[in-house]
Image (cartoon, rainbow, N blue to C red; front, top):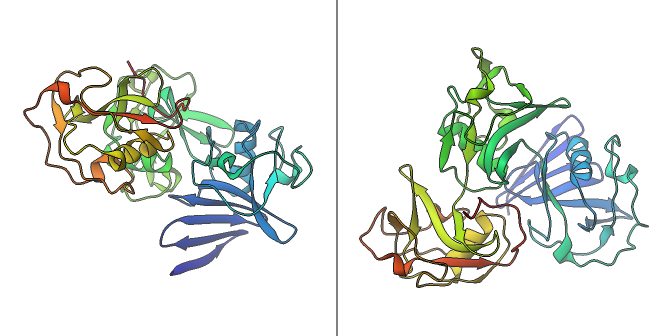
Length: 336
């Protein structure tokens, strides 16, 4: 496996062909899609090990992100979202106050003294946040210093949204909304115009330029993912995708567990349990956008899978659904 290693201040960036690791001394993030996201691992007694998600909160996350030199975050990923680690589980019941310079300075149980399995390994995403919707949809806010800022919709485009969704581990963007679609922010307004190329792995790396005055009437919002509708939990329901400004369903011909795996992963809902057919969660309305999906199960987003093109003539009695493992996850669009 090839890799590239370079040094930047006290941080060591190691880019593998399959994933990124960002390490700062005795703490690293493993398994994420960029260098500021992944499973939290700490180095102790000559061995790397993981951290249990018991009582883990946003304050702990902020300490880890700050220690690694990444943007602070409001995204904590539980239940081995970035895959289970191996070896020791070094930390449990971590409780940071927020002022610590390292996770090792936070209160915790004795190193190695825990009652967890690797299915409870905690991960973090150090980034901006989406507010007012769900983890993968909402009003965009970015953290600079210790202050959150909203972003103006003027000149904010699909390329900017691609970086936001990628950094949040939310798949591909499906919609950019202005006019405070998810409500007006009450933070300060970011005074720079964002000019992402679309291939940046972190929003903070995008170029900026001075912008004109903007008010909260024009706060920008981003919708990153497919949605599940009609289920009794946030991680189960009829699969719907947004295309050409309209939500539509997925036809169940060829619909199987690998297809469902991609949806569950894209929405932060863990593994797929079942892939119901025949409008199990009720019939949708409008267009049937996708048919003949052929996912391998490893794709990052549903639209990366092979399918028969957009839009078919089909009956909504054949709408596809999914039931994911993490039914309590908050990483979804609203179900209604």
